[in-house]
Image (cartoon, rainbow, N blue to C red):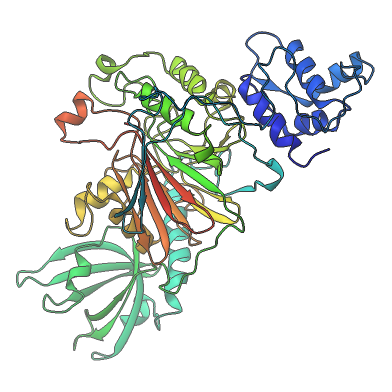
Length: 541
């Protein structure tokens, strides 16, 4: 059996509108005549079916007595087209008309090569996406693992004890990253030390306020109590105070006042990503497409641009794109904001997911797809958000996507990607200085979350948080890529060698967005080379 046979089978099934179980692909590839077996399996599927299963292949094999259809003696090594398939071969090229001056699918499609700061370094010409060159992806080389998925593991009941557990877990996890850097003493021990002593404290930010003299008073809390810490306005670290959010965990070092009632802070530490962090890379040239905020069901969903994107995925230029990671808001949802019903093209939430599933069918079947929910999706609003329930999973059956919680970490070809929808970015942008975080540069707000090692540190604000036995929102392990959406703005860059990407959206400006002055970056698809972590931004609008 040729090594590329499984990939050709996956591609051929995808071209006919089917997803397939891996075992089904293996059984077809092992047949005496894979092409005839595939044709027989497809012929036997009822109308409307989306997936080819191993049971389907066995049924055909048993019915044909193992002959799998053809008796002309051709073996599994041949890949010539079968009668009725227009001469196309599994994984072979299909002729593309390059003579047309304005190919219908390539119009408006641009590629922009950029460096880690997001600057354009080499413009690429528009691509011809008419037809399909015939992708050839070996599924045996693809590698996907998920970490941090809390779907089905929610235990929170909203009791006071649940809040105690989640905040204590956060303090323990993030405090552990700081205690090795300072000589920490608990608050009750510091309270007994003589004035003038040098002290260090690891605590959760309980309060931040300015004094009459313009200094900053930061109250830190640990498991033993609270302690006030004063940051003088003329110190270099004073600017750090403006970046603080309630409930994040930091460490301070300083000197006790003469009456031992306050700490004069000399240095401040965040859990942060080590400056020496070295990311992992794939050991082959393979790419991932990172998108978010598709918003199917909205009148402003960009259907034509989506078609351009999915057509491009079937071109030679996209042959190395083997992963599609979607960071939430697959659909527009219902009742998410005032008068939303006036902007809906599909008014039923289940019909929205049915429509999204149809759009997902346009994606080549050999891509591995991982998705998380967002605040417009039909899951609880409080984070962490579990993945979709079984009813929605059954609806979104195209390509058998991996649907995991928000947030989750997916490792693809050895490269870890933290997927988080990004609701807390609104809070970071609103409550930190403009030169630190803004909607025009959403990746800089993501830097703040990496610095704090938590995707949504502040409780009780704009971001709804659910108490669980553990804090699933802590960034325990440093990711190689941090991918968010939500704010509908495109931006990316590197923070201590971590690639941070906010991928924009697939929804043009709505009336609601106009009312809150949001000008979306729509119709973009960042493509990441997993072997270098370089980014190419594809524009389809």
